[in-house]
Length: 124
Image (cartoon, rainbow, N blue to C red):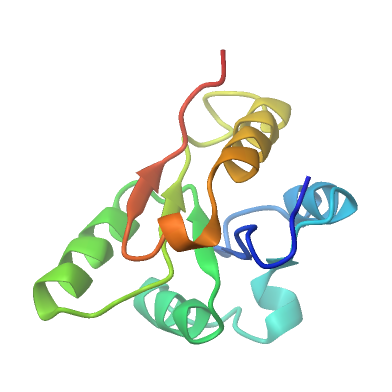
């Protein structure tokens, strides 16, 4: 359950289906998707920059580009609001991805994601 002022506010990478956002919103989480924010055409680096400007943590399935971008930002001394990387729903069901993300959001605060590249792990 989302807690105002403590819960992570998310920005979904353009590969993440809106269904995830709708499910999380029903639980009270704030989720911004590119098509609604008018950011659908941004590349990954620009998307991270935009999300950071809004105080949003990026959620992505992109295990190749976002870790590289996070490292580049760290090297340049740039700060971001956090990146959460998940295994693709090609390898686990969408419901399992949602379960893992909900568990993560229930246990981590927004302040804990700043400048972090976090990998979404299986939930026991």
